[in-house]
Image 1 (cartoon, rainbow, N blue to C red):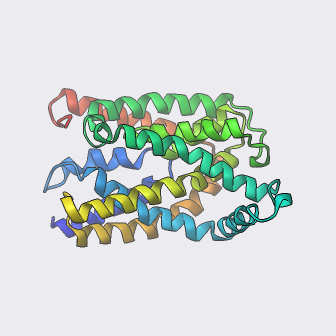
Image 2 (cartoon, rainbow, N blue to C red):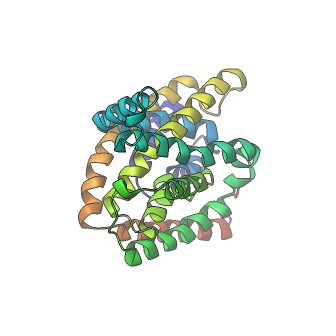
Length: 276
């Protein structure tokens, strides 16, 4: 299979898994070495292709994002607008973005190196899968986003920062935190999408800038193709996912995480996969 075909396949995987609580970075990390060319596609490729999936979020939530952005900007010039729910949501998204920004910079080398060990990835798939299952089963699921406090916004952000480790899942971490704090499934998923926008776009464009200087395991053309595919598939997944969680919950994703994590561990122990 050519590099273009492999990149297209990885873009498909990215689009399918980015918004599901199953960790898109774990899937790219696991699948990459199994392709004919072999090797980890790298943190840079993962971050750049996430630009495509976040573009899907911008398109799907364009009205919400525009409303929040207008209210947030208006809060600078009108004191009475500072209590506007949309302006407040804008500030909460900024507060929630701080943990992943700070931790991403502090642990940059580990994120791009030692934390991509497949034993860690498998462990995170299993452990956070169990945590998601507990949250989905025992969470009260009564709160809406209108009741989101500053401290809870920060806790959402800390949960999102855990996704710097492949296997945790950005949506999985934030959704789990939301369910544990008593938010409904739909509210937790919705806030997960909105919260990810600043961090993912900043990381993606930063890695895109860096790749011009230091290069990437995947060439620019195939990376662009993967990003485009991730956008199209990601948009379709958002539509289906938001409908699914309102009726079925998150348990199917829990079972999938447990099965995938166990499979990866078995392949590692049998020597069929290398940890790095």
